[in-house]
Image (cartoon, one colour):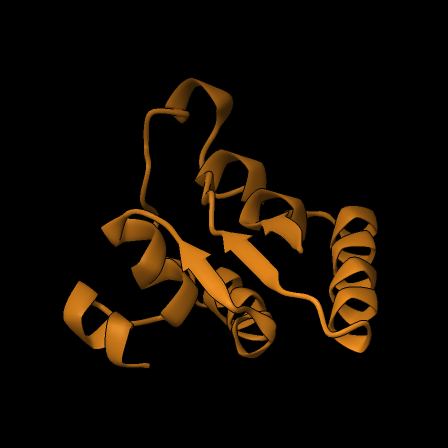
Length: 97
């Protein structure tokens, strides 16, 4: 199995590396675990002094993270992280997507 994190999809080089790891793992029949690990300040949505802000809605982040979901066998995250990964405005709707 391979574990990927949402934080590392926030930068082009680490995004590409994680996507390659997912591709290799899926080709080998392995499992992909996704820890959403959403940190708005690392996506450029909040300053470092605002690192305590755990949820900042972003269509851009949601669109990017949604591209990863179909390849994942297990997804972990807080309610807010589940919402950002799905783009939904509430947790129940997010879980249904």
